[in-house]
Image 1 (tube, rainbow, N blue to C red):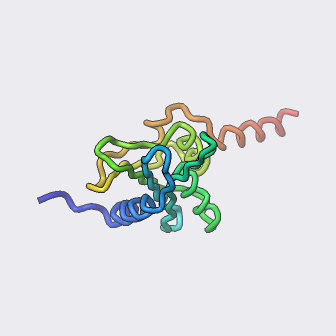
Image 2 (cartoon, rainbow, N blue to C red):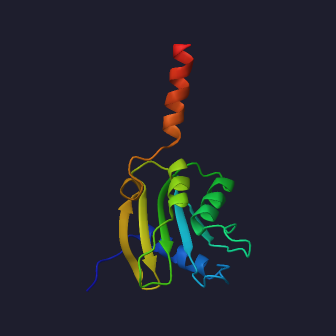
Length: 147
């Protein structure tokens, strides 16, 4: 018998898989879904939207982050990204940086596909030594105290 999945992870997986169904990916044929759990326990989903004027498309993670911000979310607690499988999918470099804007290095980044959850990392593992908002706040605080 398999391990019981955490209810929050199950909800993230279902939201990400549902979002994949709304992907607009006529050029790559690679539908991606993303679901973000915010600090209030709410889930925000997005799907990739490609554009004929490549690379002007939008990643699923960016759309999910936009939905989170528009709903009043301030902090991402976990993100679950799904692709068609069987290969693991992780956020691209640009999305890793976008996620860093709304989460610390300990953000749970979970990979899944229609068969379930496949793997998990922290954002630090995927984006080591990242540059985030805290660096700018530190710089601004030091600037005001040293001038």
